[in-house]
Image (cartoon, rainbow, N blue to C red; front, side, top):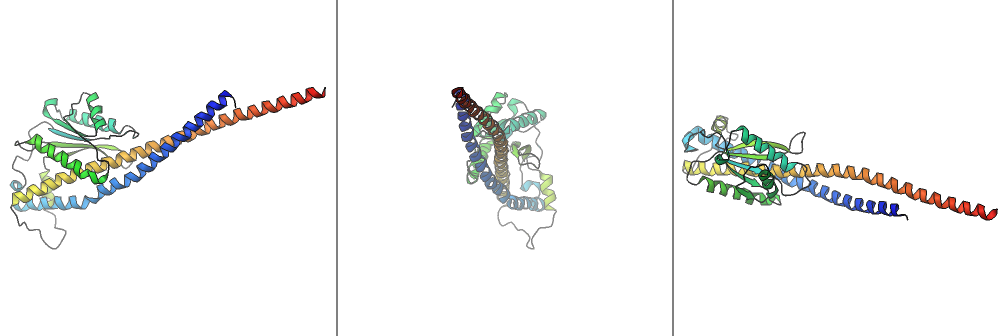
Length: 297
């Protein structure tokens, strides 16, 4: 085997190993997508129930039952930005995309550095934002499984409480990549606080979905506080689950592209190796024929 043939053989071995890794990552991404999609979908009905409960409270007891501060904030933009990213690579521009979207949205809201605090879910995302001169005040690790999302959301809510202290509830906006119809990860911005009173008021005017009308058996403010807490929890939970699902979809797409490129590269190197091998065999045969003819003269 010539030096060139040996180099091509080693290259083929490396490509085969890389292809095995890509296929493993592809299988893991495909398996992970479903668990996060199920987590995202599992709370949709519960979220609706909580929203309907808030709507009924608003209709029966008025705005004061839900909030003790003015409905609309006087600030120019959100005082808290919660941004979901990724702690792992091989998922394209997942972190870059949401970082750019959050930075541009904050700029459009005319939010100055001293007017907001940023929490990132994902260490890599924090580095990405800091590289773009966007300060990060808190970092939370990404959940490694759907079951760990609850702990992550509880950490976020605890931090919001710490930032709020005894002051009125700050404005909060969630930035997260979500699964799109045509894109693996579509950046989105969704207000978490203040509550959309008009939306809940509209829900409160709808007919209750069951025959039994809801009745409050506890203090209205305690009940409202519980419902609001559950509303915030569900919104954050679904944002995290959706971000994780879109991350895995982006990784699956990236692995599919990598697999296709590897297949083309393997075919190219294999054909080159075969040509060199055939040329070497042909050369050896010609040498044998030439030697045979020389012995006959």
